[in-house]
Length: 600
Image 1 (cartoon, rainbow, N blue to C red):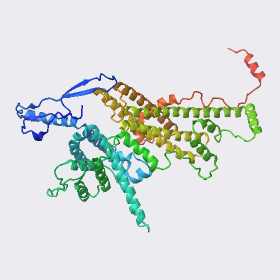
Image 2: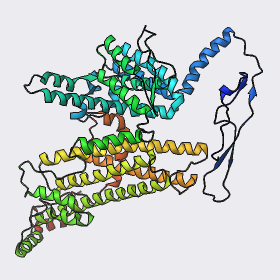
Image 3: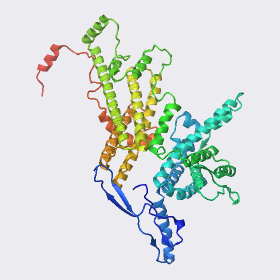
């Protein structure tokens, strides 16, 4: 409606009549009308405000049957009104029961600086936050989650509340690792005589589990949203702290007092984990991160890519690897430099000049001698044909990957036309394009080094880098496809489409749905390529397991089955009985055997 439109509900404080019940917005009679000017414009929704109703019926009599029915319906009503809280409760309790039933070692799922930072096991941020191994631990945390979820989920909305929980898991892990890193650096500067080595080792090896960090963040938000003062110390109801406002920012010291009280009562609790939750809680209440950046399909993939760019140097962008001997004139080093400097036009020349693809001498006489040798010697000729087929197969694979990369790039550009530029739908697609670009470059280097028979000391680190990039793409792609499918379902159920306010282009519901189908199909195709590359490079092991394979095993197997058809060679790389052969017997003997009659 226009800017002068008012909500249907009036202010409660201005009405002395307590029997009058006013409905909260958005309420009233909804009518939908198609625009008569342009058929592709979104539908317009009109709201007719109803008149206030007066409660005239007396309240129902309380009987034993009604009280029992009310108690049963109260639990059902809590599940219906707080689905995100119920989901988180079931997730934490179910995982706690699974870990107890399977006798899982806490060291396998905990948060630990040396494992997350040094070994890059970033998935421990999720497994550590949702792991509980003691009854009191899971009991206190789940009671707190039940109370805070009942209070805050209605204000944030179920979807936003769940997304912010996922974002807080990532944020608290990052802040906690940052504080541990700062303490380690401080001890290293103070460690002039080697007396602080044990303290540094303790910081690196200290483990933590539990959902307490996220709960402390929600406790901060709950404290700042209360109008009355907060009393954080048990049995001291007179020690309360009020909330102070500094413009649009609010602050209350009560969560910090609760942190020290919890540390005094239970010394084994993670001080830095709870402090990280308090910091993230204040940041979330002050407006960071926004809901678009806090979405799982943006935050998880963005942190993964950002960590590869700046934290783990040398992964992205792909840089030439120097051989162990450090010789700048080495053929392998020159090859990798050419791979990065050349585009698609120079691929054929680079592949033909790979080391091991045939010794090419400078003189024309040597070339003629090689050609004459290849025409005379059948074994040499068969080896040359096999190398040509291998190079043709490499070119075909690289061309296929680049074609899909261009398709994903086109879909990313079209996303800017259909949706808001800063929406999570557009940002997640940009992340997928970045992953695919870096993955394509790294894969081509691995293929070229494999064809050139480069030493394992050089190619193995590059395979690991390539595997990490493609794993990040698979993870981000699954999240993006799920979010896109949920968005399409919401548009179809609402039978309307709210266009972007920042872009002047308006598209109707049907074009947007068709574009989303194209986008999902292109992303799934990219996931198929990623799964195929991971399997071919040996970066997926179903026997050893791992959190990535355990979570995405079904996706990886299905994608590989499709990828085998996409990457299937038109001609086999190896032909039976190809190579040097020796004929047994002379031609006359073979002719005599063929003319002799067969005996019955």
